[in-house]
Image (cartoon, rainbow, N blue to C red; front, top):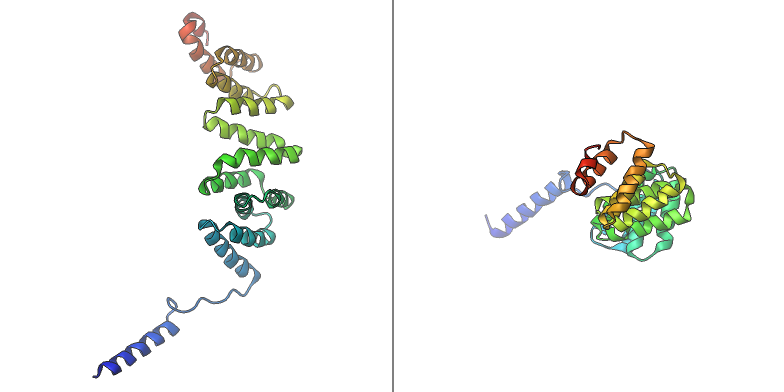
Length: 229
């Protein structure tokens, strides 16, 4: 058989395969609104993954408008907008998600993870502080999250800052007091840390974390007193 005939037969076989085999067939166009949004979200994820921030922002606006209570797209929209330096859209995305009853804590979880993936985790506290100042009614859970963020990094100064903010409303919050004590210890003020742990024990005499921390703190300088804890 001539080479030309072989080429034609091969081309016909490939054409037949691509027109009948679902592996090679052209994907069907989305037909339902849900399908169209899912396709839009795929494009948004691709834009986000390649740091195409204008494209990611535009596409995630469409997704967030269609699924306003979904924390994931809201978080990605906020990050894409932040990377563009567009704080207006960032803040609006946050408000819209809350207005649509998006769960706050999962949204903050998504936001921290996505900001880390985008290389802008350092801006996470700034973004949350701005929201806390703009929306005082949710300031406490935001400060709590900031305190957790600082505690994970052993950032003593930040721990003191956010624990103090939380204690303004609830001076007997032993969790915030414990974080305050560790922040004081990390910044070298062991005397203040001791007094803070003693304050916790005045509120909750059986608080295991404060008993252990205070006993450990006193074990070097006042070992006989440490035995009481």
